[in-house]
Image 1 (cartoon, helix red, strand yellow):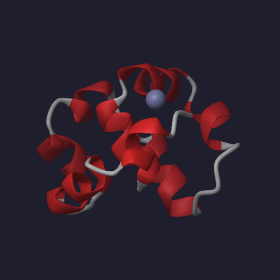
Image 2 (cartoon, rainbow, N blue to C red; image 1 turned 90 degrees about the horizontal axis):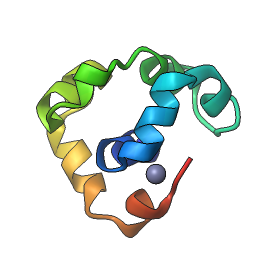
Image 3 (cartoon, rainbow, N blue to C red; image 1 turned 90 degrees about the vertical axis):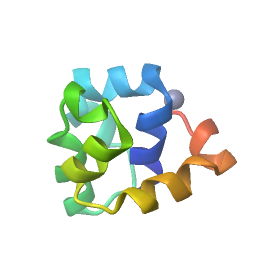
Image 4 (cartoon, rainbow, N blue to C red; image 1 turned 120 degrees about the vertical axis):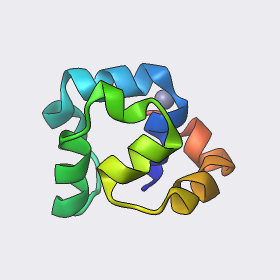
Length: 77
Ligand SMILES: [Zn+2]
């Protein structure tokens, strides 16, 4: 979830994930479900918090809650 929220605010890491999700995700401590979700994301899923939460299958309120945390903004991939 931190990874996902970070993707939403950090365009650089978002680009890296979208370019090569397998390489990026293999080094992260994520559940298989989380990896699958992140691997399936497309650039257009990041247009709004709404489209992203729908693509990731989480409530938009979860995404917004994470967005304000320092760890989310600073945790680059
Ligand atoms: Zn970043």
